[in-house]
Length: 260
Image 1 (tube, rainbow, N blue to C red):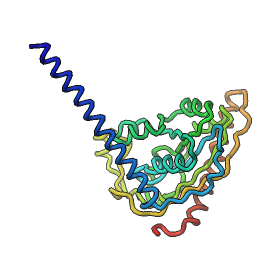
Image 2 (image 1 turned 120 degrees about the horizontal axis):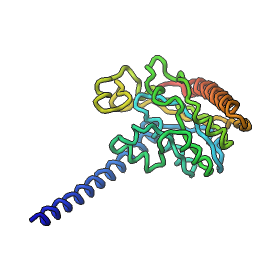
Image 3 (image 1 turned 135 degrees about the vertical axis):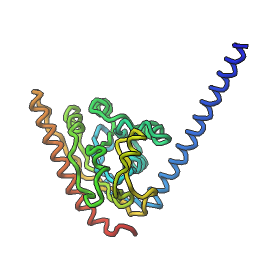
Image 4 (image 1 turned 60 degrees about the vertical axis):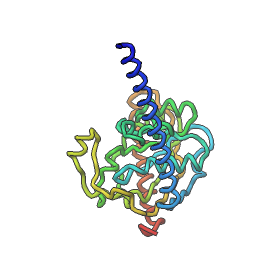
């Protein structure tokens, strides 16, 4: 009798795992199609400056993080990988990988948990790495502060300096208007164990998106002394932030109206 019960439990467990995988695959495929529709039809996204991304070898793509839902990370990865024809690893916060459907999808598309070591390893292999140095704080900006970059985590600069990889600034315009942050729901964020839950439009608004890629910024020679390396990384991080802020300000004017 015990063997029979054990067999039933084993079969049921196998079926449950199969069903979970099937539902996960269906959800990821649905998200893939929705993301393509967002990029091509809903946001009518334009990309400028693709020639500034190296055709081979390592590079760090540094973008502003904006829009309450953080949809820009998925849109940017989809757009650049499709346009470049070469892999792009995007560094993401650990909580992203806990999200149903989106977490497994992000991992399958090359997203990795954020950290200088993960960045260095991929750059050392000659890969492209995408980063949002503002982190979650970039998404937490109220709408009145849209497109004003928050302080950067210099981890990307440490990695670029270590490997000698160029840093390519990427301005993403449109996410702030498609998912404007009007407030927060801290109680729900605590319940879901998330950094924050925004009060915003439940579905992205049809704002026009523009992604503009600036000219690469070459890192300085890597100093031998630890203190000098740390200072060099901070300077590189500040230079990239200033350059990206200027690019964002310029491209807001280029895009023109919010919805068209």
